[in-house]
Amino acid sequence: MNRFNNKNELVSIGETAKKLGVSHQTLRRWDKSGSLLAVRAQTGGNRYYRRYAIESFIRKTSMKLLFDAELWVSSPIGYEPHGEVYCPNSGVFQARIGRMELLLMKMSGFEELYSIITSTAGEIGNNSFDHNLVNWPDISGIYFSFDLEQRYIILADRGQGILTTLKRVRPTLATDGEALRLAFTETISGRAPERRGNGLKYVRNNIIKYPLTLLFRSGDAELQLAQNENDLTIIQAEQTIRGCLAVITF
Image (cartoon, rainbow, N blue to C red; front, side, top):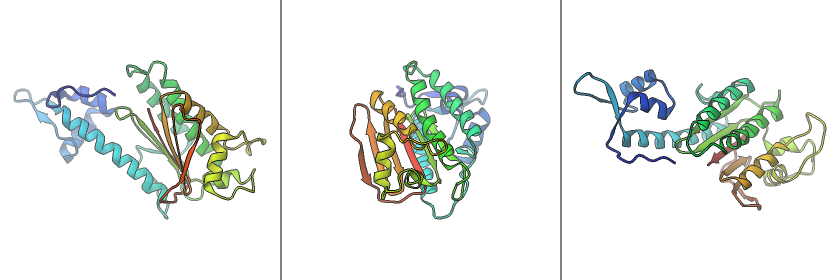
């Protein structure tokens, strides 16, 4: 991860906008609201930002996005997330993940990894849409956010979850942990749309092969996986969630 060398150095509004992936207008709005304060030049009145303030803003935003995703999937009442992270349909998701891929392509050191990161996240997001189809329990669509400076991607849905999905082809499954292990380790046969869970084997292979980590939750089960780890670590989570929550770090 690129880190700032001089935390007190002033950064132009253009460089700040590029680093945070937002417009100049958004930065001015954040300055006005006090979310990210600008420093005015003594002559000309141009806006600048201190590097330590940008880095602090990134960390706070990252934690808030993860907290928001966890709150959304654990809420007993369904509601739509705010527009910047909410993908109500697969078309919106494909457009946003395409934008993420373009940003990754421009990052130094990701020339051979950007497509793997994108396809891994894409597989998880597509599973949410493919496996729920018209059977969303309340709120359709997925939560999708990423922070390329902090190197993480968050995906979540309030769908049926892995257990309910796989019980249609494996009725003997009894727990979320069993379903999660099956989804990541076995190829499940069946004709569409019963061909469920197979994409998560692709996700697992990518995590094992490349410098990625994955935290994946469904129901009351939590899976953890990292590069070169062939064995899955599945534990019982402290909180039961609706659907699935995935965090990819790289």
